[in-house]
Image 1 (cartoon, rainbow, N blue to C red):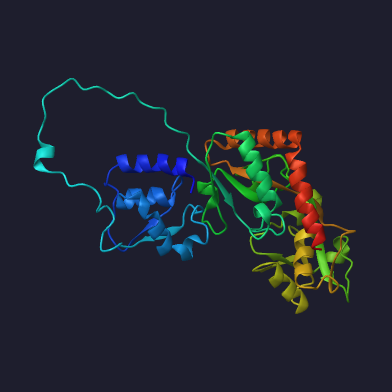
Image 2 (cartoon, rainbow, N blue to C red):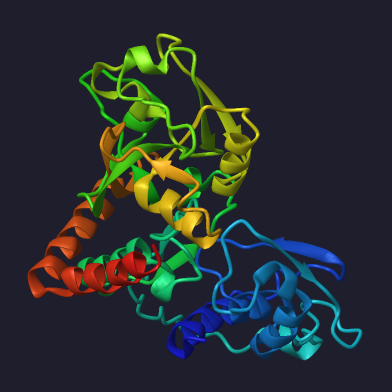
Length: 353
């Protein structure tokens, strides 16, 4: 655990008293700024019970007790029959008796530390955002380094996929494919988010069976085709650049649980093609040993897209966060750290394809 950070939070929790204490058998929803030590101090008046709290909630938290996600719900069991808040000293009659009058001396107010920055990974996007890869993947590592450079004195809390209403509680979300936002565009992705400078550029392509390749280069080829796209992944590229393939009903979208599920629908003939970024699709096929069975139509890409971080406009500090993030991004580009991260990760990606 980050001892300095834990200590500061523990002191705040201890001086806050036992007013927030709950009873055995209840649950607690993780809030911005929480850690297991903070929760243990607040709920049990004993920060050292964080290890017991972790043991009781390991199935929710996962293997790393330093990573608890905002919005997740933890159980508050009784430890040795002791209820949360039991460690608070009782107030005796002597304690309550008034002492001799004296002029009150107001303590000097210390400036409140800045609130931690909440950064949420809204989806897994192998090989660029993937906990199985070093640093959580290339995009994750770039974001961490840009934040460290642009906001060196700010604590950052990372949340993971599955957080409900991430845009309502986060200062920054990733990974995001920036849409084509024209003047007056009122779509949610254009209206409700501010986007960082681009982190990476890639091709969005169609994948088709190698045994029956279908030319999908234009509107005439696509008429009536069913396109699989993993759940939660954007489809705005089908209308970008004036194509309007989806808006005009030229194609239809079939959603599946993930990349592998989309390829299964392609095998079954339920869909005509799968649309993915070239790297995610090829990595999934290589992992399954199917790179010769299904091919990417890379010579006729749907679009060139860029990956970004995005700040929800609902946050009052959205512009400041994006400005600081972009400043950090420029810094790591200037020092060569950006290129080092890019080359190291892409070498591993290409080796696996």
